[in-house]
Amino acid sequence: MTDLVDRLVPDELWVLFRRVVPPTEVKRPQGGGRRRACDREALAAIIFVATSGCTWRQLPPVFGPAWPTVYRRFAQWSRARVWAKLRVILDELGALSELEWSRCAIDSVSVRAGKRGPLTGPNPTDRGKPGSKIHLLTDRNGLPLSLGISGANMHDSQGLEPLVRGIPPIRSRRGPRRRRPAKLHADKGYDYDHLRRWLRKRGIAHRIARKGIESSTRLGRHRWVAERTVSWLAGCRRLHRRYERKPEHFLAFVGIAAALICYRRPART
Image (cartoon, rainbow, N blue to C red; front, side):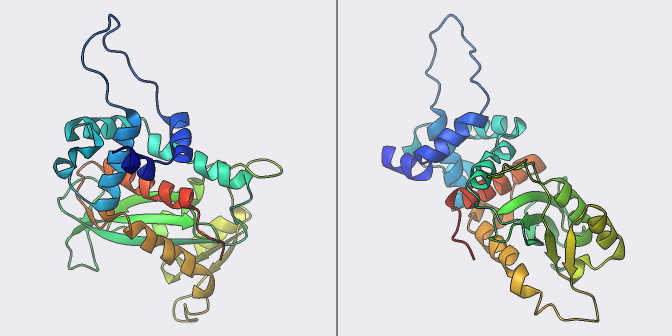
């Protein structure tokens, strides 16, 4: 079991996680009672559920904590926005100059939902079946800088402004924290003049394909990194289909997948 936990949660990732996890609440100050399950074992079990796609009830007992305990820990950490706070990984990468702000790309992907619930909607590309959409903005290397979810019927263009605003202030090797890319690449789904004006107002150059005027082929030379990141997110099998009724739990799995991508930091393109 120790080898499996160490493989899923290496020491470097565990150190970063301990910086953002809330302190443990002591329910019995007088002592006694059952020993609290180890947070590292619970985190390894959560990552196993995210990457393997198994249900909570199918969680192998090899991790130690029972599946209800792991699920409660997942819900508590989701309410505390622990997965969003794992952006400290981006700070570490920014301090090492591993982030490329010169060209960023934006994209989205639709996921079928098992049940109707908040932030689900009829998917126009899937015969109107309920689904959700994952929006992401990546740097030049494909590392996710900003994430969001919505109903599958939400137009891609409506996700641009929230994603750009959602980029956290990230450390740089020199100078102040940065949160604006130099240039943003997008496909024809974002071809709207008000978005171009909005980006120019914030000092962000844009390269958005125009409908009926140009092909997306040349634009794909720089935007393909976002599509590759979408395929990396698919490596988190829990995201192949939305099983979570609560949107914060679905967003938590998206955040876990993005944190793992940033932690493994792919080679520069």
